[in-house]
Image: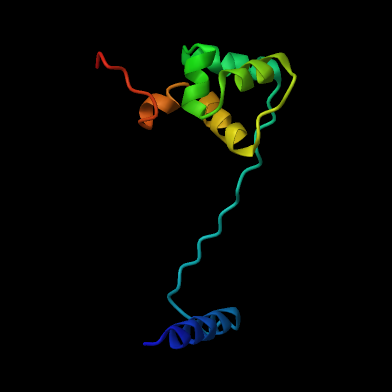
Length: 107
């Protein structure tokens, strides 16, 4: 099947679906939750509950130690990706260990 034919078939299926003519198709609807709102004290608390220094915390998130310092004192705010990661770490302080981001060499 040519690339054109694949695209055409996909469009025809989409049109049929919107008209309710496709049966047996399971549609999953997802909602992306909003990014967490984090105050400087929240970021520090997430780091402390994870048991990390600012340097180790920064390395796990993929930012500089200066960025973590600035977040914790309120000079700057984390961007979207960092806020999402921090939200996951707040839900589970072991997030970085459980997902292979941080590994202890003694284990």
